Length: 182
Image 1 (spheres, rainbow, N blue to C red):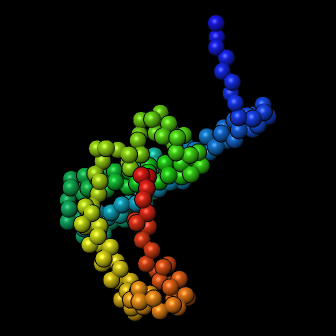
Image 2: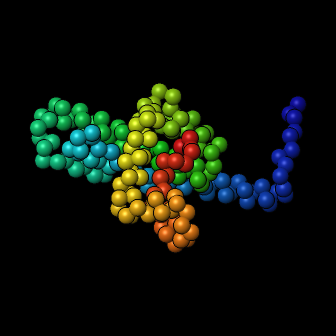
Image 3: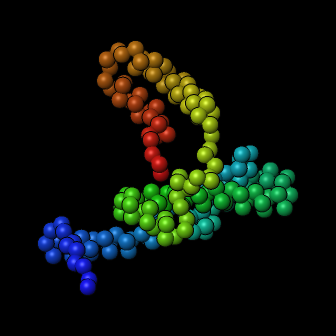
């Protein structure tokens, strides 16, 4: 005997509309993932390349000094940099999909594809240390303060100039301060 479980959540028409909306959203996943790109460069800035989430090379720039690496090392360096760019592109594609389908469906797609989002990969390189991040942040803030002529200090002093405060917030906003698992 088959147990019947109520679907719940509205009328039949509402359920059909929800199913069609999910179907349309799922159909757009491939197009969304195709728009995502990732760009990376080597530590010496002798190359920069851009790939899409499928690994297609979209752009490659080599500095004239890249010839100093020799063909073997240059080839392996291009592959290494392309892998970093592809991880960025894959993460960007999952971020786009999550905005459209939600976190649960995106996680399901990750599981089905066998390619977890780099942000979720426990074996992935976590990037820079907290100390290095803070050092770089301080350098960015000092550079911004230098460019704005001390507007940061005026804002911290609370001089009450609303227009200057708004400009300061936009100039010094660091998106890395936002918490996210993606």
